[in-house]
Image (cartoon, rainbow, N blue to C red; front, top):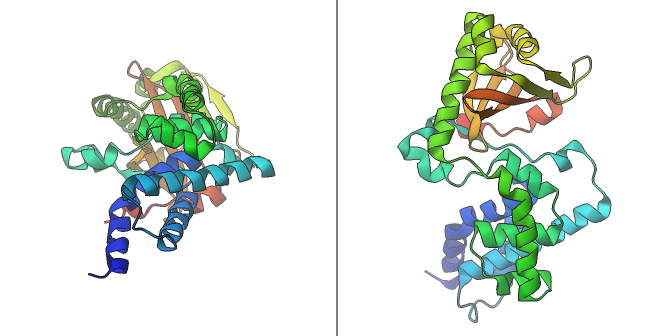
Length: 292
């Protein structure tokens, strides 16, 4: 094996980790792939002899690339929905089985990503690299251009913001799925009272704006009535993991993606339902991981 082949092999061994770093930094798989590709280009142009820890070097370079991309976003004042709402990552429902635990452990909740979007780029980098990937503060300080103490403060500020949005343990995800299963069963059966029973009295449904549709619904009886109007879709709805949390993907009779929902469950009742129905964004949802 020549040096080039060895370098390609080592990079591929680190690709999944680098992609995970970049996704948490950027909230978009497409942007994450761009950042990882840039890290490869920088590696391929570098003299690798002096690099003692290639994994650490690649993580640092990917962090720098992501930091530059985040700063560029801020300077352009991106205000679109895509900039505010992270790209949703779907994975098969059966990853709740033990065989899928390792892959599911790499997921990051929508709630965490939404909070990360509100952080300043250096705070986001410090939190992601240190708290999620155990990068030492001295290396983070070198990326950001600050002292070790300042890097610790950046991560600490971010940690306080993110604390309440931490992803649920796997056992808790399974328990929440039982609540979502009950919701789907009630919709399919057209059972209004069973549907109300599984919804929090103050449940909120937020729907990405489309012409003629309400942006937000509140209250169990209102939400139950609305859900029963789409009972025909529930019969063929596909349970999925949305960033590791319970979700449901629905298609129209023609097979086109109609909606993507993800659920917030608290105390065995559905507290929030977020619904994506915007056709443009649905077309960009990557469903390849769901295909056999």
